[in-house]
Length: 407
Image 1 (cartoon, one colour):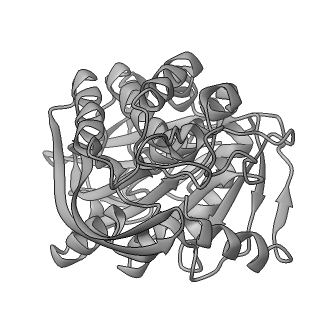
Image 2 (tube, rainbow, N blue to C red):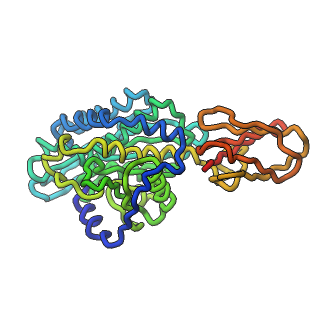
Image 3 (spheres, rainbow, N blue to C red):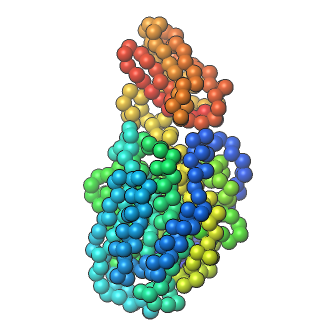
């Protein structure tokens, strides 16, 4: 995490933050999300952080930077992800911050793992965390363990990718897990997030949500996760709070929305994409020190924080298209959505052979029937369990579908 960005966050916004206590109850939980989040393993994440720490240093100028990136790439591949690549770029750094004094250009390496979406592959969700680190109390070329800052954010992306593959989850939108390089000196030159976001913007890619984790493995005792929110991303912020309150044991501290969020999320926001930035509630006292090691991390907290990112991805992916008819071919709109008792929709049924079925998220048909002739239709969903469903209508040799959420 950038020290400069930290000062902006801590002192610039401290008056306007809003504390939201966790309800400690799953009021609106979906069975698929619950089951998938349960696969997140603190032990798995601890082993990844230990491996990254054991590299000695991950300082962006150090000669082992490609070795670090290759290890992360191989880990993504080991999960069974087929589209994994090193994205190399030249990075100029000019800094006079003793003992860190450099005026140099290096090749840096982002690591991108991509799981192609099934129905809307052009819509992309990016989950990122930078893997480089730095220390101020020693020579970072020799030692920079960076367990919390920011092996924790890198490992969150790794663990989410591992769980998605273990669950055999096929997303509707394309999921991208990004381990970004060169964050620590980003205000003194280039950064991996800047390179990636600029390329995405130039290519006209449709990144619908970017999620950044930076320092999420140290709990100050409040069991609280901080949300740094962008002015133009209110829906993502509300979804994140919903996930925290309904799928985790965490409390949440949501900062007032601002334009300059900072860190690795800022280049995505500047490129016109929407996103959010997660971080522990107070800055780790081992920040940028050689004591930022595994022994000073809380892996139960890290696992709980990682649930927020994975839950946000799944919730967004499961509910995509519920309010937009153009996102899925042969889609029609169900309202209200979410629904508690009945769903309503408009469809011109001129004969008695139109049928419907309601399918749960596991692909099991839970209700069937015929539609009456007419234009306006009501279906009772009161007895359905809470979760995400698809309403599928067979009408005039067409198959029409719409997703809805039962609460």
